[in-house]
Length: 202
Image (cartoon, rainbow, N blue to C red; front, side, top):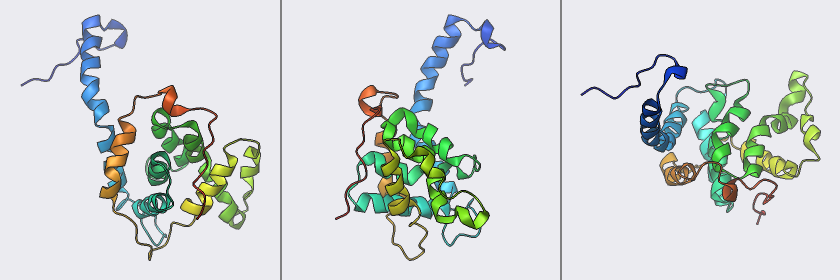
């Protein structure tokens, strides 16, 4: 059975019929977004950055597990899981790559933290390369600054431990599907200017 296709070879020549068909086909594709994200995460178990004692997948699992065990909400947990998902396809701007995946489905604070975490992480190692380890100070007046400091200290820089017992990826899959099933860019979700911060340490 032949799959339906458009008639045009240039978008400007497409008809209303063409574009209505494309919109209908787009629905199932969009619904599979969580599956593609989970597939990319699984690749990080094998296609990983050399030199570290754990895989990139394990790093994300550790960060997400720490977030969950500290009582973080779903946005923080999924953000911790996915914050480095861009390492394979966008190694030079993996933070912004990950943030754009999250942006339609999460509150602005969490997306901002993911988008800027690489600059904030420099405080731990930038001086070893002769870089400015305090680049994060460029953002000190941003209301989300404290959240990013905490995210990096508590969940990111601390999650390279081969002895840490992370929760399995399967345990996070329902939450990933829940987050990416939200209506994209819903103002009730994206909530610009709202600062929740990370849960307090008990």
